[in-house]
Amino acid sequence: MLRWIGLAAFAAVLSIATTAKAVDTVTSATVSSSTVVDKTPPTASSPSIVVNNSDVCQTGVSGAVQTGIFGVSGGTTTRDLNCERIKLARAVYGMGLEVGGISLLCQEVRVADALWMAGTPCPVEGKIGDEAREEWLKDPDRAPEGSLIRVAKVVKTPEYVIEEPQEYE
Image (tube, rainbow, N blue to C red):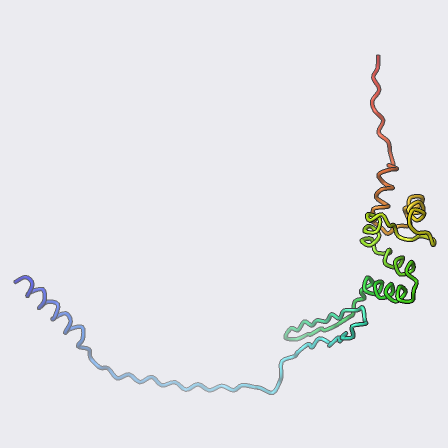
């Protein structure tokens, strides 16, 4: 019995909820506006820097910045000195001047250090092998900045010497 009463109450609530009154409402609005489209936005275009020749040791870089009022653009090229050194060394070596080609490469600290570590120091004043090694050790300041030859000089000849403390009697 309670079951039927609950079911009847549910049906009554459902019928009240589904019975809705239809109300007609009409909203009317008129909007009037005008848009001016006769000006394009300002644009800063960065220049095109084309370096597509494989025999050129340069890299192109360009960029631009634009605001609503002001725009700036620019570009430049950057030289790659190590690339130039390699091309020059290859050309000199190709002409049969092997020592000259290696000497050009030895201006790069990594090459100078690699040859020094391999026991074949860079040529100096036409001397190669052990004679070149002796010349480099006589004047290590001629070696590329930061090379092992310069570091060896600093370690062997410190600027100051710390004396051991003397014991007093």
